[in-house]
Image (cartoon, rainbow, N blue to C red; front, side, top):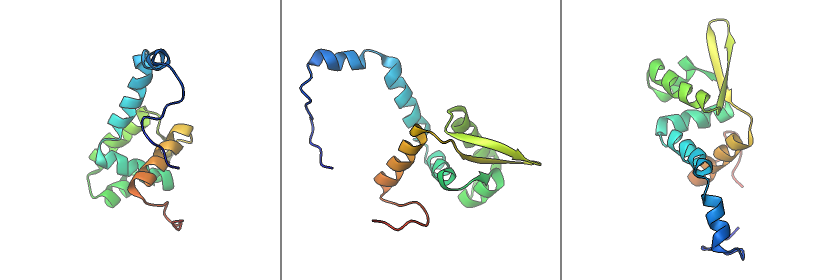
Length: 122
């Protein structure tokens, strides 16, 4: 899909101003981008979009300490982007099923021009 900017939909400036008047709406988006602006956290999120993993598995994959992984997981979980479940002594993490996480997953793959593991590029 090709889009040119500015893309005018026949709206007046008043309508644009109405949309940007509520700073809270834009703050939500800014917080998500801020959360995922950390490269390590972005990688962890992308991994969890494809596989459920525990801290030790993520630590080994990312080659960083378990404490650092736990810090990133806490931020992602507090934002509602991932879920956890306990199995005996281990906690496993996976992406939360939501429109937001699907959008973020697709955006990452589109921007990086990568496909989900196991999928062939079309």
